Image (cartoon, rainbow, N blue to C red; front, side, top):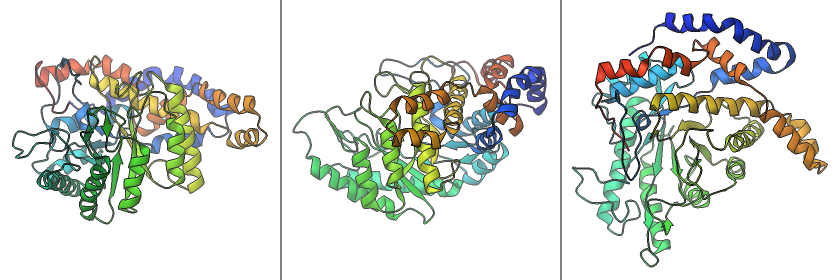
Length: 424
């Protein structure tokens, strides 16, 4: 399914008067409103190919119908999201779930929807049907050199696919670890993982980055070999200047101060990017901003402060991606909600009076510092985000238009009720 320009134009025309009335405060009273709008237009959030179908749990999966049956249909779905919000201009692939049969054709198809290819993701946390050796006891850390070599070669193959598509980065997330005390020699596991990553790093093109993703627990519950930002940073520093830490918001122990982690990684020049989601208990992979919107805002507050101090481009110098699992929602609706939540937090953080905040800090005025942050957080920036979408050619209210056009039912009519997308 492909949206027509007139459908978005008709939708916007009906809402234009109300939208302009809400926007008038910003254009008339807020000095940096235009700067915020321009930054929002430039800011793009990549959509993961594996999140376009219904997610699953360890207990079951309940497909909703009309799920994309191929990589081509996944690109079509991301193109649909991007047409609605003009902020989803990239797709991130997971190999071997989404191996392109014809790289040039896939690249051309994505371009026709205005999409680029974000980070490529390897998969050594599952055994594939044609895989000779098992990852049951680890991949890059495995005691058997042959298993480690198999995982290394898989990552190098992922890089090759990415080069063909125009991607510029590889994300490595490892489920490697242990479930019981005594099962693993921690030092040897780290050293073997480092040796394996060094071989993968050596295969990176000159203009590529590798992101080392960490996770506190699951699927191993006693230890994870890349279990926190410190171990990820160790790997990144030992690998070299093309290696960075990737932060998944759900990959922390409960109540971790993620904004402080982000600040320090930026300070060290080793923050590579994000997997955005939200959580109540652990790696819940819930809709971005649905549980802890203030935390999301605080993270962006640190991002803007740190990036501006280093002269970094907000839109292009870090990797921005969603990584969520839609167990009970329509996946496309969930992704539309997540993209907007990210935009809202970003816009709110752009409103923080940084000079006043720094003055309050230097004066140890704790109350004033809190008020400055909460004033920005409690500001309704939805008119600014909507205006950025409108100017870029998107819908003022993407989710409303998605439902108005009955997109899911049209996808079911085209693809069938029982289709199941590849992925988790």
